[in-house]
Amino acid sequence: MPYRAPVDDYTFLFEHVVDLAQVTATDRFEEATPDMTSAILTEAGKLCEDIMAPLQRPGDLHPAHLENGVVRTSPGYAEGYKAISEGGWVGMAADPEYGGMGLPVTVTSAVNEMMSAACLSLQLAPLMSQGQIEALEHHASDAIKELYLPKLISGEWTGTMNLTEPQAGSDVGALTSKAEDNGDGTYSISGQKIYISWGDNDFTDNVCHLVLARLPGAPAGTKGISLFLVPRNIPDENGNAGVANTLKVVSLEHKMGLHGSPTCVMQYDSAKGWMVGAEGGGMAAMFTMMNNARLGVGGQGVGAAEGAYQHALGYALERKQGKTAGPSGTIVDHADVRRMLMAMKADIFAARAIGLSCAVAIDMTTATGDAEWLSRAALLTPIAKAFGTDVGIDVANQGVQVHGGMGFVEETGAAQFSRDVRVTAIYEGTNGIQAMDLVARKMMDGGEAANRLLDEIQSTTETARASHPKMAEAVWQASESLREATDWLVEQDDLQQRFAGAVPYLRAFARVLGGYVHLRAAMADVGGAREKLARFYIQRLLPEHVGLLKQAQVGADDLYALSVDELAA
Ligand SMILES: Cc1cc2nc3c(=O)[nH]c(=O)nc-3n(C[C@H](O)[C@H](O)[C@H](O)COP(=O)(O)OP(=O)(O)OC[C@H]3O[C@@H](n4cnc5c(N)ncnc54)[C@H](O)[C@@H]3O)c2cc1C
Image (cartoon, rainbow, N blue to C red):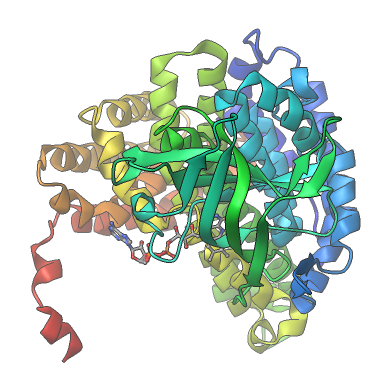
């Protein structure tokens, strides 16, 4: 089934669930009128349907590979990337002063999600550039901004992020790459970085790497890390890509999926770089890129889920098997197949709305500088990332199941969704690390941001009682249980007790948010398909929060009940 961009869903969510109007009511985003947003979504939808989706399979069958030290990308990717950059889609959210469109992140997140659904491995290239653009906008010197931003925003050059080293994965503070001050405003960067997405390509003039490294004598851990911009080709006096820098791609990883995206081992040998942000402030500067990428990766999960769902539905509408309950004569009318399709659709709606709510909070922070919006965005980012990608994995997995044996056979493409999306729960901070962030850093306010959000949810449920009493009561009860669990968590001074329940707590939080966004959809679509989907979600999926919240409050003791020897026995 060819990919169909779900433009109507975004429009409905903007209008009735995440309230994009409050963003466009600000001076900063006043130009993003509903007409303009709708035109952008429609145009992006065409790019995804006509140009990107046809590249999904060739990328899987013909992975990027290394040829005499040069990355060769999958067939059609160069043309696909050209269409993305020439359409202005790389710099959608970027500063208009440097050539960007200055759109709200809420709108660009929807576009990024569609691109992920169409072709995840190609979409990762502009996503990396977007993160780098934002980091440079916030932290780079004017000279760097003027030289690099126009090229990155136009897509003539691409950007990457280089954190990971063999001994420094989740523990970024363990990295050992070195930077030496050349005394002329430049630095010499040396070291090896692994797993670098789109570390090189054969379709742009330059690739700009943001690299974390340590200066001599820097303190251990994250405080001693600085950030450097290290281009593959050093710009000449006219600002064009000049001579080659002393860095190279040593090898590409052979992966279970995402074959079209070259995942590079990079070697830096006294490569010339420029510092971005303050000395020792590398993590703070990189966090701008990481937060952007975290929301983007959550959107990758939702996008892949949408692609997998459409694929599965297409198959279910054609495959005839057994006596069916309905008139179609195909498996779509079997109760268990319906159960899977409904769960897939309901979870996609929930995860999409959570991601877009996070984007609204980011836009409101940008537009108003308000501290409450900032803490809302910070609270929702790990949930959007982890739940969006978990839904991506679950839905793609269900998609294989809907296909039966044909799901396990590569030619249907169902398995590719499942293989490609799997990494999204691992990169950009594993989902376990996201959950720890939620229960530790994001609860340093004593649960204030979480409770404020719960107050809003409960106020909406009170209103909803008039039109949807049963659904409203279920969401109210769930939010009350989440409030109690949040209180329990913040009372635990020993962080280990919180970490032991972090993943179930994050998922329960997402489940409750899912109930809330579905309820809002039901209120806006009385008697319609969205109300029916909301009823399904609240009846069947929301109750999962009960078991999850129980687990979240057990503490750590039982996790360590078996000794390491007993684990191995
Ligand atoms: C395809 C792909 C693309 C990638 N792209 C990039 C990129 O562009 N740039 C980049 O810099 N990196 C990139 N990465 C690296 C990615 O971000 C790391 O793989 C990820 O951060 C996890 O690090 P790790 O693999 O070393 O796993 P580890 O850190 O060794 O983790 C192993 C397990 O232990 C858990 N764990 C680790 N520490 C803790 C802790 N303190 N508490 C609880 N649990 C813990 C983890 O959650 C995980 O389950 C990419 C990886 C892949 C596979």
